[in-house]
Length: 255
Length: 235
Image (cartoon, rainbow over all chains, first blue to last red; front, side):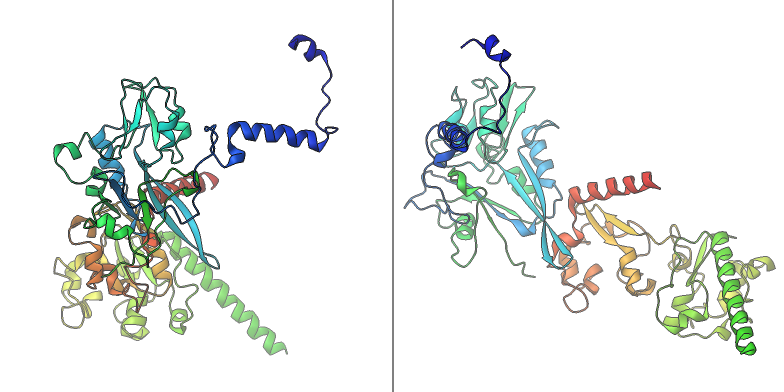
């Protein structure tokens, strides 16, 4: 195919293109990206069991990790004071342009002319099937075999940023100083390995929004919060099939 | 018919004169808010501005509303025996100061410590000589947590007056509650302190509900300030 000759041809436009031809072309594109099969843009294989909007509760008889670190967000308690973000920046030396945890904001109609604001704290969901790990060409990011934390080995990172595009939660940023992608690791190196039981954000939260713990331990608070049949527990973007380990719920505030 | 027209004309003249007088007063006093316009109660019509703010000899504030409506005084309680019914008349006399108040003149006739609060104690100074004499529209709290707002204007507009909150629930001074962040907590509200005086589920929505109504967050504050800046630009 000679591009120079093709360039000389007049553009036929799409007006006269038969719709079957257009559809075939689109379908080919979709099959290649895997979107058509319910996968994500970056996967060449179809995603496994796509979960419903509220589903995605762990189904296996056992949690795959021990301790199976997990976080529960009691979302309606969040008031965006951003102490968690400040504590995270201090503890993990996050630069001003980066983030390991964020607070998202949205408005919800609660009646005619009435709105309420909902604040949603987000961080790395430490997925059981992490799309970021799947796409990393250098195995710089990996799922820790003991704790299930999605770790970064920054020395191996080549800065291709594919993991940033693959993450359904926008939980990764490129650190200009280390020339590597950085992300939340539940304060593994800065706190957990130093004997502390909580992450910095959990400790800083004045409203007890965040609860951190071992989901495989039936006596832990996270286990008890997640396993309440009478309470709606949800995860973010369950349709990606990433099986996240950050759970959300609303609670009634007793006084 | 002719009589009726004459009556109407007179009424109109009085009304116009009254308004212009009121406007002139406002200009000299640099009033922050034209208060009481929408108030339905009849008493409001009997006096001018509900709040009189004067800059001389020192900044002070007098609330007609709390004297007439709340305390139930009539015009002749003060006029003309204590105050001439004319803007700036007391000031012109030359002895309108704390010493004469203490001697029982002007405000001191009632504000002697027995009929009404005294004019000598340090704790009562700020009732008339508040920190900046302006009713703030919105108060922003950043302690103990960031991004909390209180709409002062909304609360005044719904008919509350100064004494509803000051100084029992809140000291009448910006930032006073924030000085003791350990006490200014939600738990204190639940125990009926601060906002909890009303926000208990009976008088107003309970303090343990609708968190983000007041806790607009750091993002809410940013939006508020950028909106204010945009409004400023427009004017």
